[in-house]
Amino acid sequence: MQIIWSKTLRPGGKWSGIVGRGRLLRFTALEPGANLSMLLYNAWNPCERYNMPDTLKAQHTAFLTMGNVLMSDNGRVMASIVADSLGWHDTISGYTSRQDIDQKYGVTRYQDQRNDWLRSGQENFAVELVRNGLTLRDLVPPVNLFAKVSVDDDGQLIFHENHCPQGGQVTLRTDMDLLLILSNTPNPLDPRSIYPSTSIQLDIFPANPIEPDDICVTHCPENQRAFENTWEYYALRNS
Image (tube, rainbow, N blue to C red; front, side):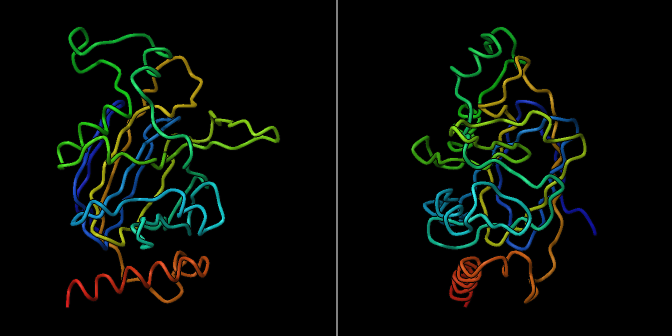
């Protein structure tokens, strides 16, 4: 399959852009221990955005893997996970702040280190939101691709350090036209004291039309209804 577009996000890097529906987004960890924080917005109406509570509640899960979808706050499918070598992507840990980064890795400043200063997830998101006409008020819980966070019997969140090997991959299909915002910054629960240095490759391909037995459509009745909402939205929008 022909690659439409590729990009490598270096450690601490960020990116945003509009990706049309009907694309495959293949993310690859180029070294072990990756964490890529991701936000999704309706490209033409950013008031509609990825909704973590509805996504988890509808699919009766606390994490995402192949067969799961990412739902919007309007009950539509924004993207589907159609391939996954890891089996678990974190939805509950959020993103790092400037205070988190300074406390864990030491204080760095752009004025001293220039592009080598250690960025936080919140700062990366803030920059990309502003570039797309949004503000920090539009910031919502992200999906942390490549990261695994579970809960023990005492209710404590457990970060699994060796979850993502080199070459770990996850592929999303865009089911809506999306504003995609990415931040290659550490998971807030990562206990390592050295700022992760894992680059992530993004390759975009055309997706095949959705078949009736699609693993994400048939995953549960709630997914079927969310897909129908999305298809109705585009039938009316394009008519």
